[in-house]
Length: 224
Image: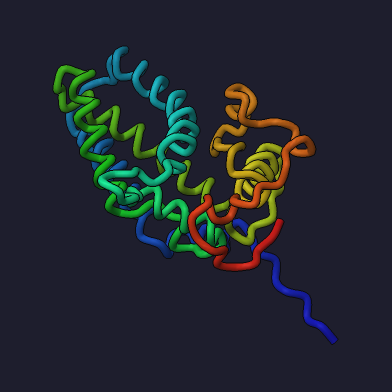
């Protein structure tokens, strides 16, 4: 007699999520910036309020274009050699083994590199105001946590419930197992429709390189 397996709940997913280091690094960055801004005991300015809204609206589009143009960047040919950038290689390995949890999460080095880069961008935009940088980076790190959680959840054993998350789940699995040239969005799945990368799945041919990105043998046999 078979024993029915225990349902993997949202709580189970969350406990698995926080067993990895990147969520804590992102949370630490987010809390640090917002704690600094709160310690100033000054009300949020209109400029800062607009920045919070702008960053939150921009971030899902950043997820789309970074996924399409950076994470899927092919090797660069230089002096007769092919050089694959580290973040592109890690994403390729993620495609090869999409169920391997460590490959789902953002590398700590990438998080720290983005911390420096976006802090500089925030400084340039905000005239090097530490208060403005804190608001910008507090919002950016929070948005990144939402991405990290959403991406993890689509690869976890959690069964989609609501229609919004079901759409995210379906599109991301199509990207991994149907055709890697479509469905790049994460937290806002509608962006693929807006950017013409979310066609009717029935009209999209199955790609032979969705799991390898044209570089390496497939590492496991997971299917849709």
